[in-house]
Structures are given as C-alpha cells and as structure tokens.
Length: 152
Image (cartoon, rainbow, N blue to C red; front, top):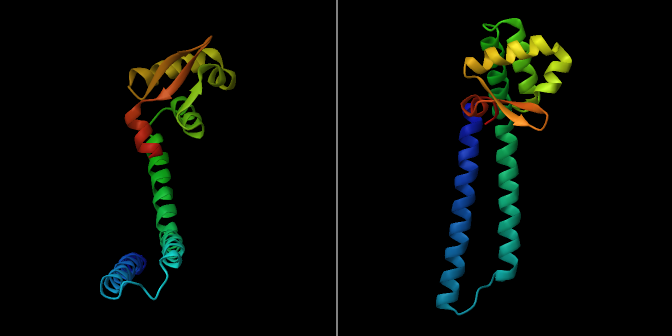
C-alpha cells in the first residue's frame, strides 16, 4: 500500500511540475520573443486532458484503499452492534440499510407495533436515534454524531 501512496504522490507532484514548467516556458517565450512556439489554444485542452488522466489514475490507485477502509468500518459497526439486544440491532440494521432514516410505520410493519415502539423508545433513551413527526407517522433518524460516523 505504501508503494501506491508514493506512486500517487509522485504522479500528482509530477503533474504540477510539468504544468509549472510549461507555463514558465510559455511565459518566457511570450516575454522574450513575443510569441510562443506551442499554440496556447492547444495547451489548455492538453492540460485538461492530462489532469483528467492523472486524476483517474490516482483514483484507480487509491480505490483499493477506499474499499478496504469501507470494509473495516462495516466490520467495526457490526462488532459494535453485537453488544446491543437483538431487537435494537435489527432496528439499527434497518436504519443503516436505509441511509440513516426510516419511518416508524415501516419498522412497525416488519417487527410489529409494540415491539417496534419499545425498541425505538429504548434506542431514543440511549441517545442513538431521534423521532421526528412525519405526517401520520414518525421518521426515525440516527442522531447526527452516529450518522457522521456511519456515512461520512
């Protein structure tokens, strides 16, 4: 992984160095000779294309690290959920599957009204979720600090 990080850093630094050197070359020729042998309308798309290429290459090199980090976070979350009672774990799993918010009606439909109500109240008292009125039902949302941990 260290090799990928070094290669990525070298690619980005090399790109900036190349852009800087060509910009200096163009500026020097314009100041000294009044014109530049490399037409400026060609330089702009060339730099843009080169920037997209370098950006794509960096993304490709770092994609494995991003996916690995995501997998580690998912494993950590699953491990932490194991300390909760089964019902709370199931409700939180539903919340996570629905990007941090779900209606109480959907939870009640799946788990039953009484079980859903008790579990939601338990999680609310623990400060993990919040209930927000949403028409004839409530919207169950992860508290902001937990949402940031899970989804950012």
